[in-house]
Image (cartoon, rainbow, N blue to C red; front, side, top):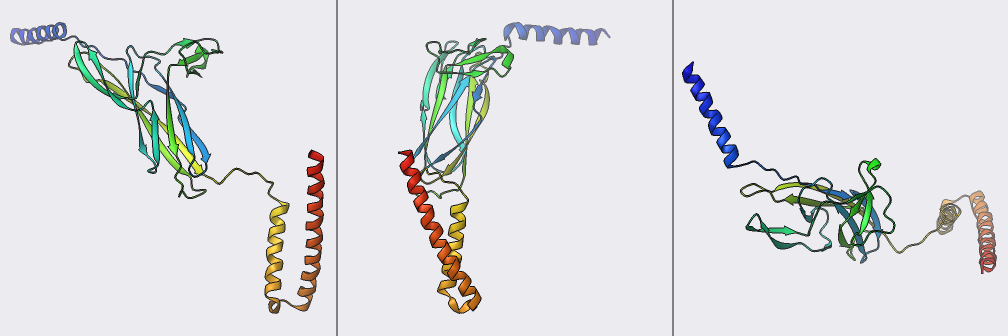
Length: 253
């Protein structure tokens, strides 16, 4: 019994000395971002600009953020600020960090910050809306260039990842966490707008008439007479439609 007591006492003593000799300190790292998903339409050759806001709600030290694409087509992408290797002195040791930027703990305000305080680039609603708004110090600009040879109408999806890390004490591994942004881009032609309805029906009717005229042998006499009358009515309708549009344009002028 005495032997077991001495063994337990020895383990307790060694553990206590180790705690005092090497105190355990953990880094509280925090990374938040908004938005988390967005979509856009763009013409071939156009550059899509994406604004990604970042904030640090609960961190007790700066969060170092590195943004990169983790999936999506091989289009030209530019980051602002661009990623680079920066050096920091952490507890007396010079440490390298690959990052786009570093951000301190974010400021929270109760009232909507309009206008924005000096040095702030944006604001977002706090995840707990009752707490107000989070002032944004750091923004990431991502520029995606749509290739000239892209397929019109085919949706492309990109996923960007932001990895945040915080330096711990000497001898500890930096804490890190990540968040993602999904971006959907649909290549389109130049902008135009028109109602879908009568005009589409006219085109369909026109195609049917052209088909019957080009192959008269396939149609019966009754069909030919009906087609001729429909063609005449079609021409009259188109003329009236053009006159009506001309009058409408004159009125708007």
